Image (cartoon, rainbow, N blue to C red):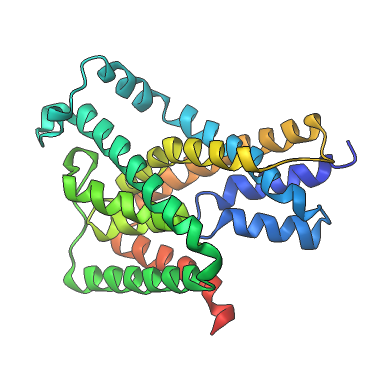
Length: 272
């Protein structure tokens, strides 16, 4: 258990960073290699296990929504994506299905080009941050608030969010950061934006973890240490989701835009 304390620290960091508009995997790899002395060959594999903790945290926190979606799968048809308010679960199922497919396609293409893009990920995230801050300030000056909820999903939202989530394959781009930003800019309430982003993470992370796990390996870290890190990632992730959801109900739309936009800009300041 000599690696145990390191895994506890990393699990706590993963549980918090996963939902913030920063690249959790990038920051974790830096902490592993430069601060904790973990071999770089083990860093990717370790990040896969730690992400599984936050994945289960999101799945359990939104278990009622997921169970409702599973119940609709028996009678689900693509034609049910018509925008009728009485078919909320069917539209949400279509939203999650198609955004995951788009994410996989876009993410795969970007992943293959990632090494040649340099700081493009940080640049894109900085641009998103600027757009988000601007949107928040415009909303403040106009004295308008976001009104859209999960009931108001449209096909346009599916296309935009699928592409946006796929862009998180760029090094430096946060999945949660770019999806929450896109949802806020699309006019969703803060609580709805967080909820949709969290729900989107479940199928997307499952697919990504399967792909990463096939290429990752762990040579020196014991199974008990991995379980310990994943447990703290799960506990901290569940607590973080609860805090963010409660905060989203109290924070006004424009201020949430500005706050997330500033957080998205922070990683880019070192390159200015």
